Image 1 (tube, each protein chain N blue to C red):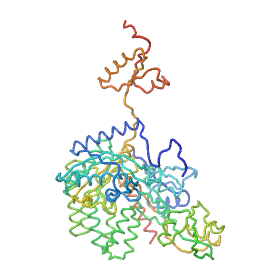
Image 2 (cartoon, each protein chain N blue to C red):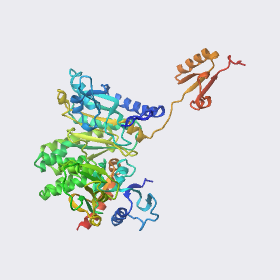
Image 3 (cartoon, rainbow over the protein chains, first blue to last red):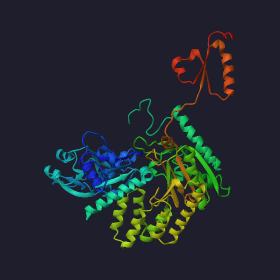
Image 4 (cartoon, helix red, strand yellow):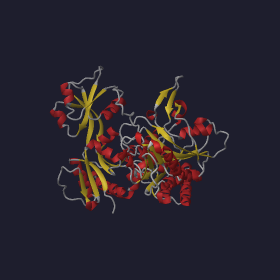
Length: 212
Length: 393
């Protein structure tokens, strides 16, 4: 009797997409998981256990080894800098990180402020650009910040650009493109290598098909 | 800064209460006895060292050092590891002793900037340094000793991943022209970012064959057959040297009978520049963090002006105890509760029992706050209260 492989995933759309990838890779997962409020969902046929977490927390569960593997956005990987293996680009939920502001935004030398849900990523990006800014950490609805004058720019995820447009903001710079990644705890990576390699190889084949 | 509450400790600092201490002590004793039986002599070095010597030479990143100033204004560091202090000792106090030198340590080390729980800023490490021996036998010995020590401590299910930085560099330099490019790619391995490694390799627009050789590096993980696969990827002197070193290490590990715990992993890059040859890391199935690690560092000793090749490992005692499962076992103790009138009788009884090797607490009944609670802490209890010795018959 082996322990099920523990997989940390964000709730919602990414979970659905990742589970679909696993199904296509030949893992026998039920057609749908009921009871959406459950935080731990078992898939005994595939010998897997899903741990449903906040997207930003997935790398934390994996780093501490309470999940063997996880599906995490590249945005959270850059922000959190967790000690985990990033083994595969799953290509799901593509989007990108961008700097945005009001259309009339002009660079100012007086205490430029940037609001973001990703303070580490944002501060590192502006340092690389040779610009010193003050970062204001927000937890959501980042678009508000320039509208109400809390900050003159924001750093946030853009997928369709619709949210920016609806709030009258424009994209100023693209920082990095983002997709979900398969991440692995460093100990599980060695101790459960055959199972995890099997998943990674089979997922890689499915992902390759999508690219073609 | 706000005033701390009276119960608070600085971030990342932990107390060790008796029950936990006992568990940890038991593990440490077993490790020490194994390491001692291989002839490594324990040493101690000061908790404070100069930043400009040990601080700079250490493998630990600058931002992880606790720094302070002495009265003359020198910057000091709390020792972040034991390898650099031992290199200092081997190059100074022990400089008349010819190589090789086998030393061991068991001490607490300090790492600052730990942002959250699960990452103590002070923890115990136990390990060895085999200084001044460049042979594969030495490399094999420290890996085998690490495995033997983990086994002796009671860890059943563990693996040691073994890589070789000499091979990684040989392959990267064989394909890439500049040191910067090599550093860039090696950093992806150091950060365990295989996705980034693949994307970067593809962005270099190398000839297909070279691209495949670099991507092939990511597949070099598994049993001894990977040594032959590694051989096929690169043909230059340095790679051949590294692989010959690993083949010999594999032989040594077979001699010691620990090869079933060892996998080869050429992606293992534990540090950007510190290690020069074989590197290895130990994992237990019950904990998500690596428990132990080490490798060959042939360039450290010369920083202390006695060039010498060296290899060693360190085991994180806190993590090992966690991986073994904290037992919370306290040693069996006897309590003799006495009244003042019968004190000399009680002392005599305690002496008799202590001579038998028992742990005996001698307690005046007037000094006890709660007798029932006290009684619950002991496996044996003797009442010697009242005014006089009770009748024998």
